[in-house]
Length: 111
Length: 111
Image (cartoon, rainbow over all chains, first blue to last red; front, side, top):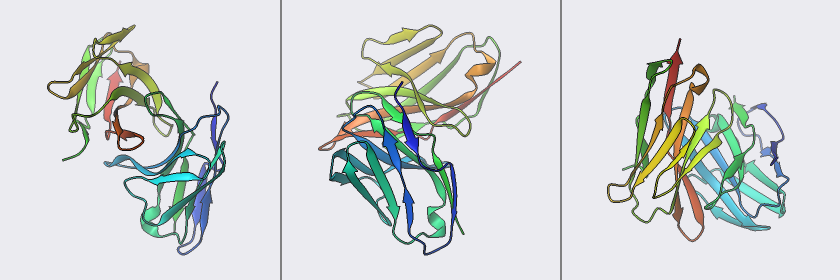
């Protein structure tokens, strides 16, 4: 079974903190994605990586950065957390014309 | 205009009913099409791919109409366990294969 694991299910952070969300996949997938999901807005792509050290901006990259130093790991970084970044964050791997596998999600609250 | 549009619902149906969802997409260059299912507070999971010839998996039938740019999902003999949000997904080639999600259609099946 493909497994995509996100480091935390729930996080509470303060405004202005630097936040790291980690994602690890075990299927040697080239592609990895970070989405956020908000009510009424669906899943929106933040960043995408198609190889180690390669990244592409998605639809809403502002306020975020990413790191992919190893193929299996894709990190999302909130440089200075703000309340409007309170959301559910979902990591996925695979994708393209094939199935995307999602992690269990991280519900981040910024206070 | 949103790239992928779905009726958010909810669709309330009794057990045993047949229910159909439609999804429209705006980019005629969309390449691949999928239906994902998302249970409450869980990650999305692939339900089925959608092919030009249409495809069926048990009680579920998916169809694609490229000319009108919509895809559909038909669920026959609804079960209580079908209650979930159904996400329409298309892929776009924007230099990389980008998955674009609809906001989802919520289905509630009642006894």
